[in-house]
Image (cartoon, rainbow, N blue to C red; front, side):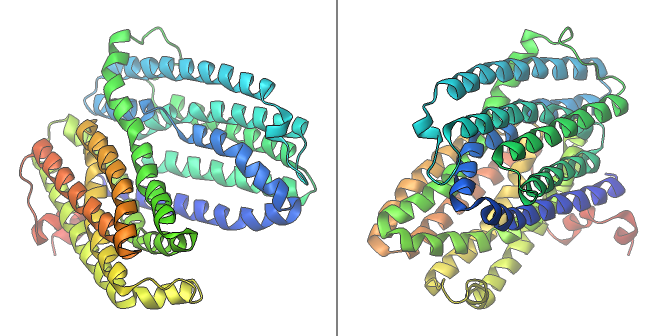
Length: 446
């Protein structure tokens, strides 16, 4: 494993998370102040689906990206080109289909559904929706070029470029608003920056991957069929996460009232902080894992799996202890005393956090080699069951019941993920020696 490449990857993921946090904090006050709450709220509703569409790849970016990394690692560049063009054909088909749906919706949706009092009228809202749908379609093309870059060992570069593109979009929209421009001009700025960014990704991918050719002639129906199952499974991941995070919050509100939801979501947000930090360290290792797995370097695969499992287990235990000791104090400071969960809820959440910090990073190893079907569908089923159980438990035992269900979900997912990873790699080592593989060579000799 090339540690300089992994280290740059860690820095790039950290940079991307800083960009996202900055834009979330900065855009709200700027747009709410310059446009007013009515127009800003209307903007959020009109842009939600197109932006979500832009972040999606229908699972083909993930499935094709993993296969591309494996094929490039083995020197099968002709196969890599076939995989890229096959996935590109599917993405273009999806793009044109969605374009037809978006165009129809934009033309035929009545003004009453689009306009808002003290906000945009129907015509302006229609223009924003049309432009942002175009933004989503342009953004759809991004994932395949990012996959090519990752396959070529350029994870850090493509991650940094994508984050810079997001930063440019946010700054452009805020600049438009501060200059007196409205949502239509902001949507044009969004779309223009994304188009420039995706074009830059394509140029960079073509320059660095000499085997890459734009076109469809090298694609094949059989390759599309081979990608279909892992792609569909990958599509279930965001749905499972949304069901887990948003569905349970809705169940808490339905069972205990709206006032209970901030208690649940605030504690959950706090518990996921450690996981986000761990993912900053884990994500840059995934392309290396895919490549070594493709080269059938089973000894390295086992050692890195054991190292990740051991390190994450220790980190989860430390984080859980920290939450037990400092969680109440931090929540009081963070929310100015407005969020005060029962200590039993805090304790259950701390244990659930420790389990989550192990199974989430390990599950990414399954995704990295397209062995995630069983995991994905199990997660979807368990998340759906957890949503229903949350409502029942909260009705019976109050807000503490939601934490009990979260703990149950994380323990079950830990067991499932652990078994699936062991089935994939075989028994992997645990302990201090296992963690040493995560260190650069000069530290291993000490």
